[in-house]
Amino acid sequence: MFFPNIIVISTVIIVGVFLLFYRPLTESSAWRATITPLASIMGSGFLVCVPLLYTNVGNYAVLAISGLLVLAYGVGAVIRFNIRYSEPLLSGNNCALPVNESRHSRHVAHCQSAQNIKSVGLTSTLEQTSHIVLSVAYCISVSYYLQLMAEFGLNFLSLDSASYGKWVVTITLATIGAIGTARGLKGIEKVERVVVGLNLAMIASLVAGLVHYNAQAILDGTWQLRAIPFPEDSWHTIRLVMGMLIVVQGFEISRFLGHEHSAGERIRTMRIAQVVSSVIYVVFIGLMGVIISRNGQDSNAGVTAIVNYSAVVAPVLPLLLTLTALGSQFSAATADDAGCSGLLESIFKGLIPIKYNYLVVSLFATVITWLTDVYQIINYASRAFALFYVLQCAVAIMTLHKVKPSPVPLARGLLFGFIGILCLGVTIFGIPAG
Image (cartoon, rainbow, N blue to C red; front, side, top):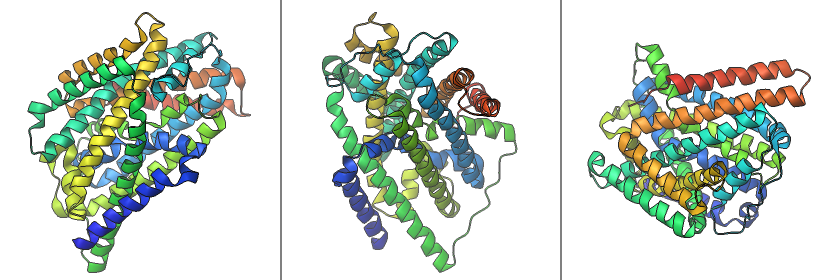
C-alpha cells in the first residue's frame, strides 16, 4: 500500500501548492469568482454523498447524483438569468455599506445585495422574501456543517457522536457567535482561503487514489460490481434523493458577489464551477462503486463511512480526510454564518444592533442542532434551499415578462416554471436519508 500513499500525498502537495501559491491563479479575479461557488458545492456534499446514495439507491447512485446535478444546473441557469436581468431591474443603488471594515466579506456581500433593491412591485417582494428564506436556510446549514464536523471528529476519536456531538456543536456555535459579536469574522477569512485550497487538493488526491485503485483492479481482472438491488418503494426512494439536494447546493453564492465581480464574470464562472463539480461528482461516485461492492455498505458508520472506505484506497487517507472535514466544515459554517448575518442586517433594518446578528444566528442554529440529527438536518437544509430556489424561479418569471430578453420568452418561462415546480417538490416531499 506504499504506492497509493505516494499518489495521494503527492497529489495533495502538488494541487495544494498550485491552488494556494501560483500567483497568476490566486490574483485572478475570474479564479476567485470560480472557486467561491466551486468550494461551496464541493464542500460537505462530497464527503457524505457516497454513504447516502449507495445506502439508499445502490448501484443507481451515479444515476441519482446525475439527476440532482441536472436539477442544480437548471436552478443555476435561473440564478444566472437573475444575475443578468433581475439585478439591473431591482437595483436601487441605496446600499453604502463599507467593504473595508472588520466584517467578513460574505456579510458585506449579502447585506449589500439585500439592501440594494428598489421597490418594483411583486418582483421585488419575491426577491426580498427569498432573502428571508435564504437566511433561514443559512441558519440550518450552519448547524448542518457543524454537525458533520462533530461527526467526523468524534468518529476519528472513536467517541459516541450521539452523546457528545450536540455539545461540540453548541460550544462551537457559542464561540463563533461571541467572536462575531466582539470582532466580526473577517479575521477568519484568511484561514478559510487556505482551507478551501486544501479541501480541493484533498478531493483531487482522493479521486487520484480511486483512479489508481480502479485501474489496478481492471489490470488484475478483479473489477466487478456486486448487485445491490434497487429498493422496491420507488417513490420513497425518490423522496430520499430529493432530501439530498444540499450535497450539490452552493452555486447560488455567485448571486451575492456583485460588489467584487461583474455580472458577466459571475455568470461565466458559476457555470464553470457547476460543470467542473458535476464531472467530479459523477466520476467520484462511479469510481467508488467497486469499493462498495468489495467491502459492503458500512451502514454503521453513517455519514462518515467515506473515511472507512478511503482506507481501502490508501492508508493515509482517513487521517487526511478527517482533518480536511474538520477544517472545511468549520470554514463553511463561518461563511454561511457571516452571510446570514449580512442578510439579517438588511432584513431587520437596525431593529437589532448589527453585532448581535451573529448571536441570533448561533442561537437559532443551536436550537436546530438539539432538535435534529445529522440525517434530518441534511433534509431540512435541502428543503430550505429548494424553497429559496422556488422563489428565485418566480423572480425570473416575473423579470422575463418585464425585460423580454429572448425571441421565445414563453419557452424560457415554461422552463423556469418547471424547475420551480421540481424545487417545490423537494421542499414538500423531501425526507431524511437515514
